[in-house]
Length: 316
Ligand code: NDP
Ligand code: OXD
Image (cartoon, rainbow, N blue to C red; front, side):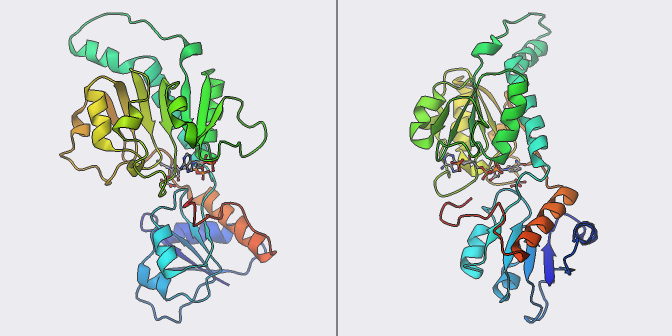
């Protein structure tokens, strides 16, 4: 059985060593994808982040493709055109949830403790204690409550903020896992109207692309704060910048952009109430990801369907 790996950001040997370590009973050879190889270099499984199109098109015996991340928006179009019918399987947490919870909690506390207001006062050497909003009324809304959203929700619950969430289905993935109000996407305006902080942890799909434009973001209460660590194209960056400039939004912490990197000339870079990180909220960890992929290959070998199989119609 052959597993082919394509990760432009990580030395191949790190993946090979980790995959071999977790192979257990599986007899697997692990190879790096060679974009120029003869078409007869066939693989049974692939572990990829945006693989070369020509390589994917030449594969005839793939049983599954594993995406080296949670979001599949970059690889799904390639799968549709070059490997239709081959299951695409995404990472489920694999150590990213903890990182995402750190990222989101830091940004929520930054907003709650009014750190942007203090930065503005500091710029004028002004010593002025500000009123701290009551924690019990500081509602945090999670738009997207999958692996990333739930990891953030669990940690925010420990911080005792009141939580609410909105998802496509409005149904919890596991009974009792989220005890706040849960809205389906048809009730987005009602949900937004209650959020002091909006945390966006959505996948990029046909339905979520530009979901958050000026009119939609305007439904947040005046002074609300926005955190986006899902995908940049889920919101309209210029509309967001307008709403911060107009004071309707008090600020934003943004990890994802359209395009990436965010162009140097974009005004978001120069807005004091906007904090920018370069898509680092939760990074793929080689060890836990290799363990998860091997676990899923073992499940496929037993004839089972592993978790994380992407529904191509929904796009996530
Ligand atoms: P999941 O698939 O586990 O969860 C996705 C969530 O989004 C679900 O709650 C789903 O609803 C909801 N959703 C999907 N479509 C819609 C819609 N049209 N309207 C409202 N809600 C919707 O994904 P993860 O939590 O693992 O990851 C989410 C995204 O986070 C990834 O796709 C990726 O883009 C991003 N990400 C970013 C990282 C970073 O470093 N910045 C790192 C990791 C992930 P339902 O429950 O009904 O299915
Ligand atoms: C992911 C990401 O989707 O890193 O995993 O953005």
